[in-house]
Structures are given as C-alpha cells and as structure tokens.
Image (cartoon, rainbow, N blue to C red; front, side, top):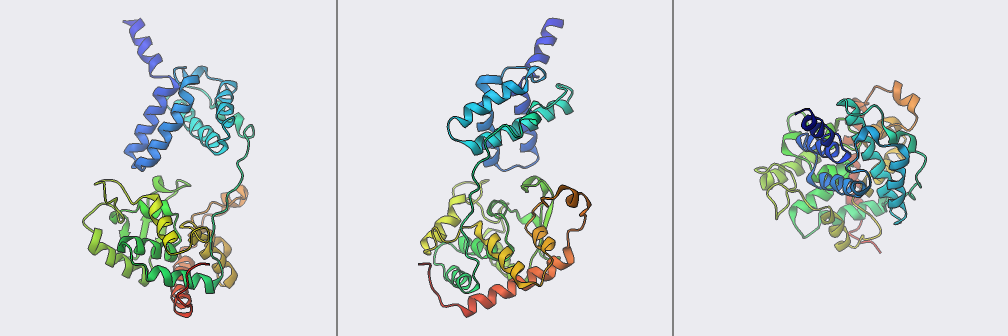
Length: 316
C-alpha cells in the first residue's frame, strides 16, 4: 500500500500532471477556450523532455534544453511563452508543496528576444476620420460593424472585446467591467461607456442580448467571434496593411497624447498598460478613473467630429 501511495504521489508530481492541474484551474476561472488550447500546445512541446519528470527534480539546465529546441525552429516568441508558462507550472507546484523552486526564473535572460512587431495603425486625424466613416457604412454583418466601432471608441484589446460578456456590461453606471482573468496583466479593468458606446451596445443587445457573449460565434453555442473577423472586415474596406483591429489602441493613444489635454498615466491606465518603471509602478495606486471618464467622453465626441469632417475614402 505504501508503494502504491508513493507511486500515486510521484505520478501527481510530474510536470505533465501539474501543468494539467493548472490548466484545469484556469478553465474553472473562465479562461477562453482558445487560450486553454494554446497552453496545452505549450505543454506538448515540453512533454517529450520533462513531461514525466517529477517537478522537484527538474533543473534549469533541463528546461533550457527544451527552450533551445523550440528556438532552433526559429519560433522565438513560442520559446518565450513556453518559459513563462513553465514558470507558472513550477510556481503552482511550489504553492502546492510539490517543489521548492522555479528553475525558469534563472532563464529570463537566456532566450533570444523576439523582434518587436508593431501593428499597423492610422494616427492622423483626417485619415482616421475616413476610416471611421468607412466602418460606419460597412455593409457586412451588423455585429462586425459594431465591434469595429467599439474598438474605435473604447480602445480595448480586440480579444477582450470579442470575449466580452453581457454580465460585464453595466448600462446604469455606464461601465464595462472586465474580470482580471481575461486581462493580459491579470488585473481587473473597467472602461467608461460614453453615450455613443451605450447606443451601440443597445443596438447590439437587440441582436445578441439573449446570448452569453456580446459577439458570439455563429457556428458555436459557447464560442466567440473569430479573431479573423475584424481583420477580414478591415481588409474588405480597403485597410489591409494600413490599419489593424489592435491599431485602434495606437490611434487613441497617439491622438490623446497629442491633444495635451490628458495625463499620460491616465492614458496608459485607460489602455490597461502596466508602468514600465517598477519603482513608479509600486507607488502608483491611482487608476485615474475620474479623468478617464472625461477622457473617454472627449474621445467619443472627437471620433464623431473626425468622422463627420472626413470624406468617405478607403485606404490607398
């Protein structure tokens, strides 16, 4: 019996077993199915090398061999993501008394830094107004048009918008409250809904209000709008290679900063960015909410002005 108990404990302490436990925990917390799928793909990359090894015995050198094998394929971003998730697995093992340290912590500087990819964005007011006018006249699915207009008004990450649920929308207080497990920085985030955004959401509610998600997948009961839907719509409007769904965040940031009306930290807070200076981040407790309310109302009005002033012109 002791031998069987020891075997069960050993099997439950392998990298694969603990990674699976952690992924199941993330599923219970509501992480999106596509994200869960990506995490399982990362585990598969590590499984042949350390999958069946007890986490308490895995060294930094062993993990580095796994990561370098991924790098040799030229997939540097994947290697960085694997190191990050493997670190989560080890820290989860430490928290559940099955390991004493995270061997990934020593590997932070050991990997090739991926080249930064800047997403295309229109940041000039006249051209941005033309983009807004083209979107407003979009003849495809109403949900897609509304999603693009909300991207412009609210400047969220596209994945956060596509995964938004009606339970997160407070029409009375005009707030979209995004839970922390859906956020890139794992911090709860709220976005003020200006009257223009409320009007769009009310129009959308008449279409999808009976569903869990604002933008449900047309082919799946539980899925959400495909990540290709917004980029495909922008391409059909003639903005392929000129502006991306993520680019609305750059448009907002650039024009809000150039206006000189708003605190730069308030703009960063509206974008749910974490301050790069760790010391300043430690002391910065304010989320600048009152200023952000005024700023998002200003931005919605500014979008109306730019759209009205610009001719209906597609990208060159």
